[in-house]
Length: 186
Image (tube, rainbow, N blue to C red; front, side, top):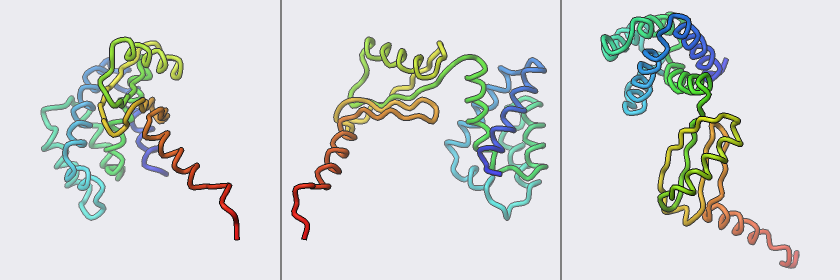
């Protein structure tokens, strides 16, 4: 079974259990911390994927890093995941939990990359586009600036990508010109 499917199932289980126990916000903060730590620490990600390191060692490391910083429910969750030999899915479980949490709360996270900083009017227009695409009213927009786009924007909504940048259009045009239909064939 793919790691993403495993991560989705474990994240859903953790989300349901936390909601049932009334600890959803605490577990969400734990998973924010966990995801942030994994994103900033490549060695920890590699350790969790490493098949040579024994499962009890991985659990001990997770407890040393997150012990006292996360709730008892999250610590028990780490223990269950390591008992089932699914540590390699942990890096995906954090982000999948946050995605499912946002869907449960009716929130859609989107990322927009532009060549220049957004104006308030354009920001609201992009939020409206995200609302139409996702069907969710609450939108969190993360903004990035990348001058190499030349102009336009790249909008990522979940696993969908809308690329309306000048650099993309130039690449597309270059590919069209490389297919010269007027060149005589020998």
